[in-house]
Image (cartoon, rainbow, N blue to C red; front, top):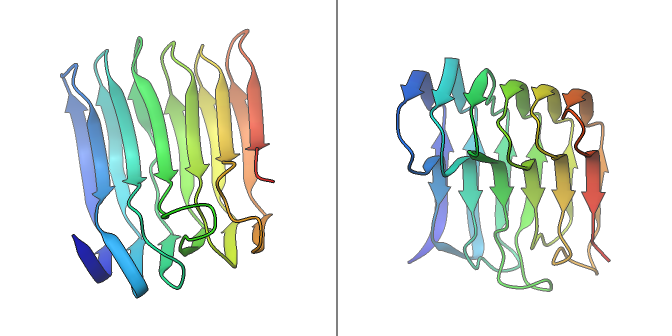
Length: 193
């Protein structure tokens, strides 16, 4: 499907304790935006807490359609905190890989989002992943704190399919108390050219 605009705002997920081995996705954005399209995903949050039994994956936000240059995505003021997953559950966090190609993707503003007090299991974790961004784009003033897991942690990753001709600003992000036992911890990983 093709869309010109979408708003996913002010949704709350309240005190969820899920006993399932299947995957859980809080927000899944689907549909290719036109060159004049816009999408806002703002002020969504977990209220009280979220927990899930062992198995599969948990994703807070997923966007991976083929929207083109000229379109705009804003992910602002979302708060996915107080999360507990156990065992081999894969915590994928905030995944924004929306874009048709490395030279044809939406401008993205991903700011002021909070991921705090998260207990992971044994699988590697990536809390925020951004790829296929057009420009100018910004990944700024996000907070990733108080994360504890035995798997490897990547707090934020910028993929190699982000635009090489447009500016992507990464600034003012706050990282604190990322604990992974004996596994590696990376605050920002960038494979962008």
